[in-house]
Image (cartoon, rainbow, N blue to C red; front, top):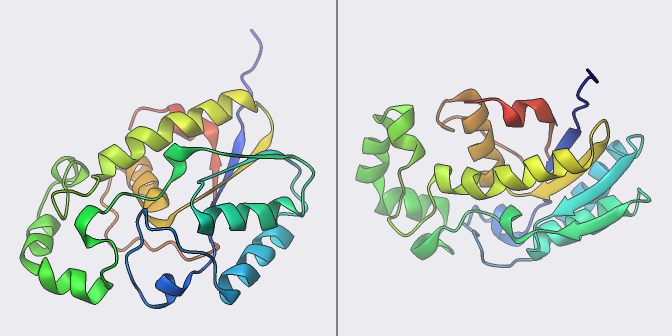
Length: 198
């Protein structure tokens, strides 16, 4: 029986935007990279230049799109975009600063800390936001498809902070409390992790 070859996925959070610098919730609101974010994207491209990527996939939101384009300038592979790699939809709180969000929803957020993982996984703050389960529910099939497309190869995936945090929560079966993913941070996954029951 032939040994199964797994892809190596390099998940990258996009570079900084002005709203990241202001600690403002972006969600689906489309903000471009700022100067720092452009530098971060180049830095990631340089750091990963020694890895031969078979393909690069990215969220179509400007901040991820531009980051992916700059990373792609250090590679020779194709770049494509997938709607399901977009950031979480945060509904009515998009545009809030984090301090405004924590002040307005302090009671709900305190209650959320007491939830079991299973309860937290499907919870939403506010009610019109995506839950972690919904985020991973659309992102995981994309990553699995990428893994199937590139067995034994490397692929880059440029996405967003809460997408990566939700995926880490899924893999660890623990809430994302205390998990921080910085702009330009790289998470390396052996794709067999994506096909294991969690």
